[in-house]
Amino acid sequence: MILVIDFGGQYAHLICRRIRQLNVYSEIRHHSISAADVKKLRPAGIIFSGGPASVYYPEPPLFEKKILSMGVPILGICYGHQIIAKVSGGRVITGGKEYGKGVLKPKKSPLFKGLGKKEQVWLSHGDSVVKLPRGYSVIGSTERCKTAAYANEKKRVYGIQFHPEVQHTPNGMRILANFIKICGAKRNYSIKGLPQKIIGEIRKQIGDNSVIVGVSGGVDSLVASILIKKATPKVYCVYIDHGLVRKGETEYVKGMYKRLGFRNFYAEDASKIFLSRLKGVADPEKKRKIIGNTFIEVFEKKVRSLKKAHGAIKFLGQGTIYPDRIESAKASSAASVIKTHHNVGGLPAKMKLKLLEPLKELYKDEVRAVGKELGIPREYLARHPFPGPGLAVRIIGEVTPDKIEMVREADAIFISKLIKYNCYDRVWQALAALLPVKTVGVMGDSRTYGYVIALRAVTSKDAMTADWARLPNIVLEESSTEIINSIKGVNRVVYDISQKPPSTIEYE
Image 1 (cartoon, rainbow, N blue to C red):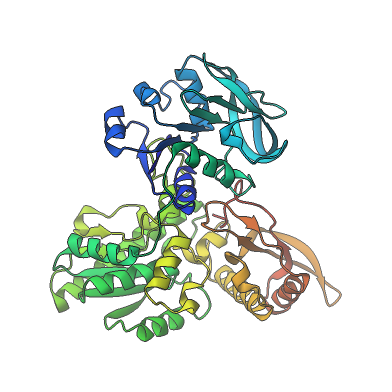
Image 2: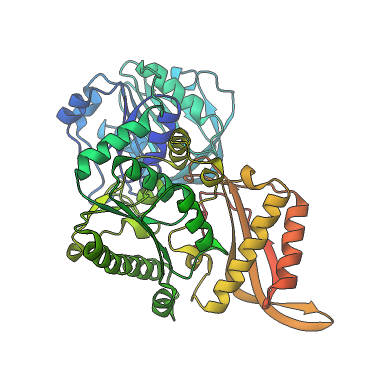
């Protein structure tokens, strides 16, 4: 296996996912792990992740230096690259900032085997290595960073200032594959057989106890609920309509769970309480926390009623996956919070429910692969992701009933055009968002002053990185025309061509 040591980088788990994608098992550990514990894991290689810290912070994330002398190949990425150099006697300075795409000029090294004379890479750093430790040499440079990559070939220790794990480094997977070869790791990891293993783990965890599962209609909660259903008949699925769902969503979800044979399925209309608590709230983190807390409160009420009817319930099942945890800074105490995910905010002690998250170690593509093995119809597995807080994170600023209807209708129109022109399955996720600005327009020779709808469609493999989808003009044209003609208060439609990073897929 390849061990990923996490220094708080938002892409620590993405590195792990990429290694798995190359059919090598990978696990993540916090940077405080001891050399003795690393030795117990018997890794074939170690990767030090990036992170938001500087090596010059008063208390920068560190690692036990003995790890460098274990004889195991090591690859440092970004902050990992810098901290290895500094701890080993090199010099790092604040300067030479590079953000976004750059050009690497690689030198001859096993790490860069098969690369060209110039390679596009993605960088995100404010510190730079300017002096290498003894025994290390430069194996790559960019325009602003002479030591963009280094190596101690004798010790098999490498450092790269750029990120090979993101899609914006086209040959990043080749670099990681080269590192795997340096490590001598066997490429025999597979998802095959994982569902039965997860089901066994669920049975072991819950015993003879009942589980209440929060379902949304999305792929994650659907696969999680199927796994739990196969582990125990004592499962109760609760779908909460918080008034922020897609058009026709509630009826669709009811029909889906009925078709899949769930006996104990409950749809709760809690839209009034959610919308009343969101009134006047514009801050995105506050909105997420209100939704998360209210979600738990509604669940508490449902748990009490189910306990009266069916007896004790001890577990709450959720479809939490890796990206949810990463962006909520659950991967490491050194991570920087991007946004809170309502599923991972923690449960109040009074709820007295233990959390059951069978998919928490998987990415979306792995979840779909598990679902396919379980025999779940492709129609359900191919649905685009939809955020837990719903349309609230697609309305920038305060959420109001009128704005919800604008976004809901715009979203339905956009999705219908993607389906009409066979583009739905070509994109990872598509959405409509309402921007908090108004612009002047002309309708029927009269001046209008209306809102702007932003359409966004992205391609991705795991939601950790994403590129904007190059849709046919006819899709955008018909979407724009119908949205403006049919939604009162909207007079302009724009298409978002931002990548992730630096943007996120959702707007809040």
